[in-house]
Amino acid sequence: MPAPARPEGHSRVGAQARAAAARILAKIARGHIETEAIFAEVHPDRCSGCRMCNEVCPYSAITYAEAERRSQVVSALCKGCGTCVATCPAAAIEGRHFTDAQIYAQIRGVLQWDSSHASSASCATGAPTPAPISPAPAG
Image (cartoon, rainbow, N blue to C red; front, side, top):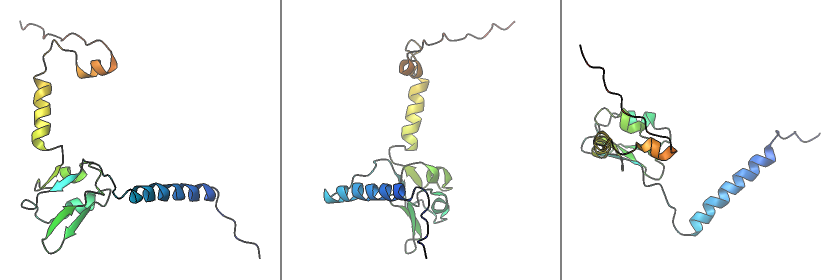
């Protein structure tokens, strides 16, 4: 009886899997693995234990501690997407390096930007900054 045919691309998938395993093993051999500095953090004093964040996390980076009745972020798995931050009804989760205070400060900085400076978009693209439009006089 002939051997069953392998699906198309089988050898390519196997090569990709071996390459991914080799990259991870190389990092482990160095003795440490670097992770992203941006991840979510749960403030346990504010967490109600509703588990909404656990349900929405696309990376399965949030666990529920039964003993404490609180959710916890596994920082090594978290990609800092902010889905849990936006979902939490108790505002118990903050994005590390993206706290409300930091975002408000950025907004204030943009609103206080001196109009004599080029906009950040025009600086990045090299496009000219359009002149501000004055409202038409009432009357």
